[in-house]
Amino acid sequence: YRAKQLGRNTLQHHDGASTSVGMPLGEQEELHQAITGDQLFLEYQPQVDVATGRITGIEALVRWNHPAKGRVPPVNFIPLAEETGLIVPLGLWVLNEACRQARAWQDMGLAPLTIAVNVSAKQFADPDFASHVAEALERHRLQSHWLELEVTESVVMQDAERALAMMASLRALGVRLSIDDFGSGYSSLAALKTFPFDRLKMDRSLVEALPGDKTAVAIASAVISLAQTLKLSVLAEGVETDAQMDFLRQAHCEEAQGYRFSKPVSPEAATLLLQTQSM
Ligand code: C2E
Ligand code: MG
Ligand code: MG
Ligand code: MG
Image (cartoon, rainbow, N blue to C red):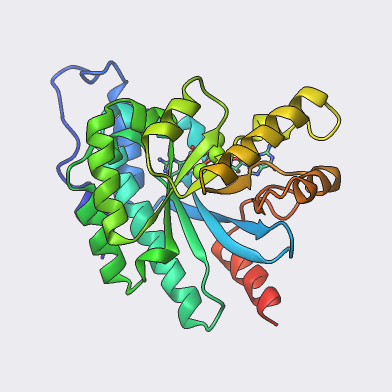
């Protein structure tokens, strides 16, 4: 299974030097090269149970090893991928690579854990997305409940009816759905009311000022109890300090992710983290 097969024919060539979306063709061409030419890789960041400290899940985060520029962070190419539609083959590569890695970890005898994959708007709007997910699970013999898809509110709010139908198809497969960056936007509450998520990921901006800032404490506490009331599991993003952990424990936040435990790391380093925990 190769990214090459996915990336083919996705690039629209124009006569001029720029694309229909006004991007320099060079950049788009380079990104296309990245997808088809093995320049992308994944790093993994553990998600831990706040009460026990055990790793319960791991988020896959894409990176681009550019031949000239070196390491490019996702903020510098995901928006371009979105605008050009290259996010579809890129996202498909990420999905398959993450499922492949999850299968490899299970085959090594490590305790099974949830693998979380970020999904962007164009991917979620692709009518074939649910079948791509089903194919990836089947190809890598991964039970669906080990896969979690992370979407932000803007992904589902764009076309609510279509998003609801997509979520129903994904839930029918048995994959888990989480709302990412909760609290960073404007319509988070509307998104929760309308869409059947399994998990809420509280944005780093709400966690940052904990526990010193009273307003931050009030908001984070409210978000955690909101999640509990709606029967969603809740994870705090961007946890960096022991003091934040103490607060989250007292507030009964179930899971946490952040530099306090590990930054996103290579597959090899992630394997070591998981092996250490299994001993
Ligand atoms: P996200 O999904 O909200 O991922 C969390 C981001 O916060 C990651 O940045 C991670 O490295 C960073 N982070 C984690 N813990 C901490 C912490 O304790 N402190 C601080 N300061 N930062 C922390 P990264 O890897 O640069 O990714 C940025 C965003 O790019 C992601 O935000 C996600 O929206 C997007 N992204 C990454 N990989 C993919 C992908 O495969 N597909 C799509 N569609 N988007 C992706
Ligand atoms: Mg995420
Ligand atoms: Mg996030
Ligand atoms: Mg984010």
